[in-house]
Image (tube, rainbow, N blue to C red):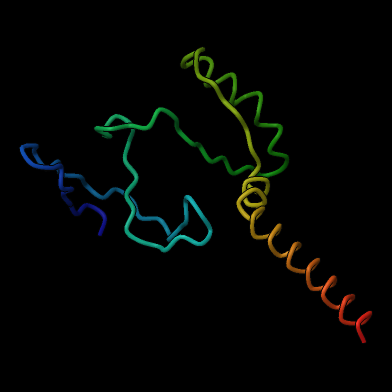
Amino acid sequence: MIGRRFHLDAGPGQPDPAYTIVGVVANTRHNSLREKLGPLAFFAAAQDPDPLPFSTVLLRANGEPDALRGSVTRALADLDPSILITFTAMETQIENTLLRERLMATLSGGFAVLAMLLATVGL
């Protein structure tokens, strides 16, 4: 699989660029924990014809992740001082993703307790 080339449909009148597979990663979800898995390609920012105005960088650290914050901020500031950077722990992102489901479960449980209380009082 590594070393093989593939093309993406660029649209009418535009050349279809060819890309070479340089690595393979496991299946992952990006936008939601409930999204269906499908084919996904990662491109170098220099190869992306329509880049997003932001980038996400995932850092894995042995030990305390906050210890990397200063050195990563300095390294990015050395590249370009205008880069805005925010740090969010993966646990926090997962909690924020599951916030709606957790709220619905809490509300459903509250209504269930209220229904049991009303049924008990009615008996």
